[in-house]
Length: 330
Ligand SMILES: *[C@@H]1O[C@H](CO)[C@@H](O)[C@H](O)[C@H]1NC(C)=O
Ligand SMILES: *[C@@H]1O[C@H](CO)[C@@H](O)[C@H](O)[C@H]1NC(C)=O
Ligand SMILES: *[C@@H]1O[C@H](CO)[C@@H](O)[C@H](O)[C@H]1NC(C)=O
Ligand SMILES: [Zn+2]
Ligand SMILES: [Zn+2]
Image 1 (cartoon, rainbow, N blue to C red):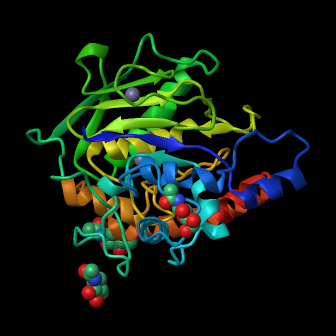
Image 2 (image 1 turned 30 degrees about the horizontal axis):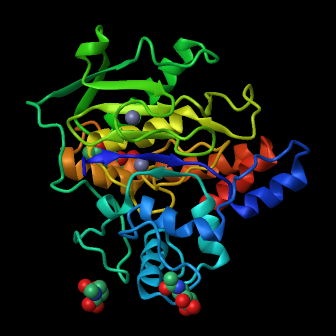
């Protein structure tokens, strides 16, 4: 299996749906909740079951139970091996399609249910091995793009996403003059686009990226991408900057983290932003590349705290749904 990072599977948690239905008159997207009968396929897709089919009517099937247990452990849920409502809610929440089997590990490099998991890497811990100072160029595809957001705004969101990583590691990202020569190539693609990982339309897989040193970062053109939720009103809008930040983490060599607040956690709710690196993301990427000499972890931790407080305040002043999303993520 190629070291492919798959994407972000988008749907709503029941709690969010409930609250949305009480706070918004807009119709809810159809099919946004995972049916329990879909769970074997889901668990297979994300690396928890070797086969997509198991005897689902038999909830005591040991293989199924252990798959559910590991999923729960990797998502900070109470480990019961049962499809309880919290587990189904998590499965219904937007997530990246990268197989957790490949990428979620604890710091000792093994899957141990009783150990809290953190950041993770691809097998062999691939990273960009350039002479220092490492400079990676990036470019947006000139042809595979979206037309409803002005290009400069897309570029600005992508630039901010790269900037967050560049701040903490001694790696610089520069826009490439020539798309074909760029180290990191970003583009919006629809359906089957030739890399064996077809996108699935609205509210499915959102994006995927490949491990180092591939540099391919693909966003699902079928999503309703947003750079400003004040302008983009769709209930299924997805924050471009948040997804770009997550996928750049994969481009750099990070896998999924089991820390819910981390940018590298697989899930992202629609109409929510998660762009600030957490200490887990920082530790993970610095273990691969070292620290940016200008980066001060002490002041970072201080700003991380004040940012969290600020976001809560902003969300309360902004819109109610934003608050709910924030609470769900915590
Ligand atoms: C699935 O499990 C149920 C309940 O244990 C059992 O009755 C049924 O025979 C099983 N089906 C298969 C195909 O194994
Ligand atoms: C998992 O970690 C716990 C605590 O460190 C340890 O006691 C246990 O033996 C480990 N289990 C496995 C299967 O490695
Ligand atoms: C890092 O930041 C802290 C708090 O802002 C400050 O006290 C400390 O001197 C800084 N360390 C360096 C090496 O700049
Ligand atoms: Zn991911
Ligand atoms: Zn692709």
